[in-house]
Image (tube, helix red, strand yellow):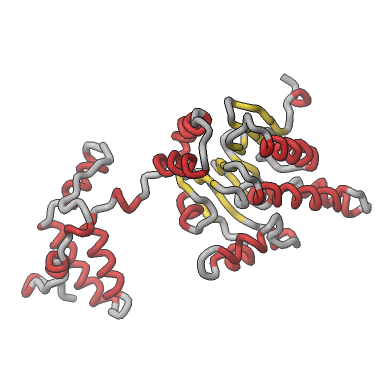
Length: 310
């Protein structure tokens, strides 16, 4: 098939779902003006349409959601005073606002590279699903621009000074960190995305809460996979270690290592992750509440003459 017949963006109804697929995989689904002009009116139409419940946006090709705006074309126009330099930004920002204001659940599957203009297509929506392949950045200061597409709105609203750091440095967040930073609302393994998509499409007249429930069911929040005992001793280790010398930390950690050898979670964890690889360890105790402070204190107690010495 010659590339001319491949639309740059696919807009289709799948059941009661409006599906937007950026379809320029060779250029990492970079967003151009003609794509913006197709997406915007369709988004407004679906928003008003009683036959459409949710809107999903994704990228074709498996490498990128959308690596940014088609900046090269904009600079060419800017140099010669072409109107594209005004039209592109104006219409892109109008689309960003429409996404932020969308009354139907809007779900961006940011599986792959998501930068600049691609951030504008996702981050203002209600749901943003990252995977281990997500690579998020706002690298505009490196090209003499600034983090636009509403960067001035969402970046300062990330925790602490994280947004300022991302904006100034163009630092790339990867995988799960995209969710931890608050850029994504959910994290789902890439291989589960087709199943997730199908389940979302199959929802019967869903509310935002229904969509939330499906997305939540796909993300096993990592902490629940961890040993409750390990979580508690690690918490205490880092609190104590902040005020200790390296030598004292190593003495403490040797005591902790021997406690783990005496317990059962270490053996069970290695069995589940490295030996049988069923990834479902049975921790004892199985909840944080059941781990007594006394059992944690024992992990830090002196080993007498068996203590580590230098």
